[in-house]
Image: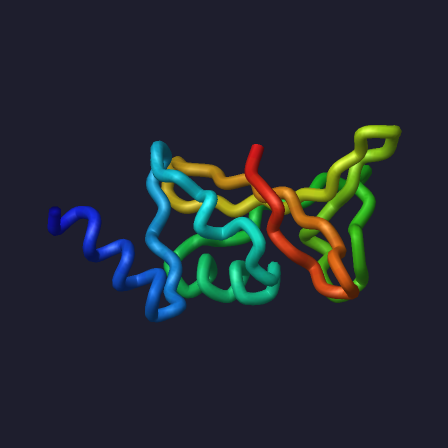
Amino acid sequence: MRKIILPLIMLSLGTLPLFAQAQDTSALWGKKYAEVKSSLLSAGWVLAPVAEDETPMTEDYPEITCVSGAMAICSVGFMRDKTTLALVVEPIENTLVVTGEY
């Protein structure tokens, strides 16, 4: 019971859990990217390096890159210890929003 209550308290306070490899990241989905980025960086995550041939989505967030093609997605990577987290980011109503993970 204690394992369930702590994450619920953290979410209700607006903080994000410290993610481990097998944790569910759906709590991030639908949140503004700027808030998610700030929370992850505060929790010890760092931005994954961007390859030279990747195209940034915006000048404000060069870490978010997009692939080309009909089913193209834009994503950003974070790393902590030996764990990586790749988030899908979409512009929704002029705001960058985390919409998933891959």
